[in-house]
Image 1 (cartoon, helix red, strand yellow):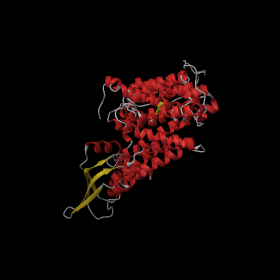
Image 2 (cartoon, rainbow, N blue to C red; image 1 turned 135 degrees about the vertical axis):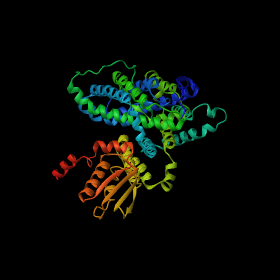
Image 3 (cartoon, rainbow, N blue to C red; image 1 turned 30 degrees about the vertical axis):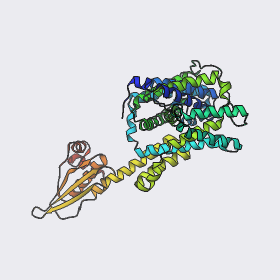
Image 4 (spheres, rainbow, N blue to C red; image 1 turned 180 degrees about the vertical axis):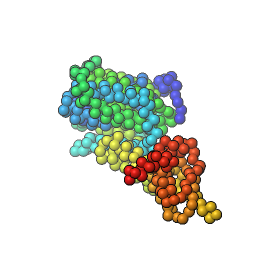
Length: 497
C-alpha cells in the first residue's frame, strides 16, 4: 500500500477534505447526542468528547482521513459506571483509558491485527453495516408519511446528484441532501423530528476539568476494570476501522501510532468534560465516500462540530433526522461487503461459518470486541484443524536389521500431537525404530510430549529408538522440554506413575 508523506496527509486533498469534514460534522451531532443518552450522561458530554477526540486524533493518529469521536460501543461500557458512581468517575476512567492505550501503543500491540484474518474483517464490516441500518429504524417507526418521503428523496439525491454535469463531482451529495431537506422542512414547516428534538446543545466551549476525585487506590480499583475494557474495545474498533479505510483508499496506516493517538485523545476528552471514544466506521466511511482523504478532514469535522453546536444551534436544530437517516442508510449500503453474499456459495464452509459467526455475535450482542474475538478464535481453530490434517507419515521396514523407519511430514503441534503418537505400532516385533522428522516441525510442548510418549513407550517394549533429522528449531524445543533422552527425568516420570 501507498504511504503518504505528512504534507500529502494534510494538504493533498484540501477541497475534498473541507467539504467532507462539513458532512461528517453534521452527521456527528445527532450521534454524539444519542451516544450520550445511551451512556446516561448529558448530551454535551458526548459532543465535547467528539470535538476533543476528532481534533487530537487529526494530529496524533496513525490513519489519515479516519474519524474518531464518541461511539455507541464505548457508551455501552460506561452505563454501569455512570449509574453506580457518577460522572466524575467517568471522566477519571476516560483519562485512565487513554493512559492504557498509550502504553499499548508503546508495547506495539498493533501487531495483534495480524491475527485477525480477512474473513473476520469482512464479518465485522457486515455486522457494522447491519447495526448502522438498525440504528436508523427508530427514526422510521411510528412516524408520518413525510418522514418516509423525505428519506426517499434524500437517498435519491445522494445517489443521483453525482451524475449532474460539472457540479455533481464537486460537492458531496450527502451535504446537498442535508442542506436541501433542511430548507424544505423549514420552508414548508413540516412537522417531523429534527436534531433539535434530540436534546439540548451546549452553549459554551469546553474548559479544562480535572475529575473531582481523590487520587487513591480505591478510586483506581473502581475505574480500572472499566478503563481496561474501554481501552481494549476502543483499540480493537480503531484498528479494524483503520484496516477498512486502508483498503478503501489503498494507503497504509500505523496501528501503534493510532493507539497512542487514541490514548492522547481520550486523556484530552476526560480533561475537557468528555467521555471515552474511538474510531467510527460509519463516519469514516461517510468521510471517504464524500471525498475526504487527509487529516484536514478530521480536523475540520471536529472544529466545525463545536462551532456549530455552540454558535449555530438555532440553525442546526432544523435539520430533519430523515436527512441524516438517508445519509446513514447510504453508509450502511456502502459499508456492507456484498461480494460476501456470493461467497457463501463459492468459499469454503469454514470460512463462511467464521464470517457469519462474527455477524451474528456482533448484531445480537452489539459487542464488537466479542464478535471479533469469536471470529478470531473460530478461524484459529479451523486453521489448526486444517494444518493438522496436512501432517502424514510413511513407514519402511528393513528385514535384515529388523528396523522400522517412520518418516513424518508436516506440522506437529497440539492438534496433531495425538495422531503423531498413535502412528507407531508399539507391539510390532522389531529390534530398532527410527523416527525421521527431517520433513516435520515441532511447534509446542504438546508435540514434544507426544515424541517423549512414543520414544519412552517403544523403549519400554524393548526396542532401540533413534530420532533423526531434527531441524534447529525442533532441536531447541526438544532439548529444552523433552525428557526421553534424560534418564533421570524418565525415572521421575515412571516413579510418579
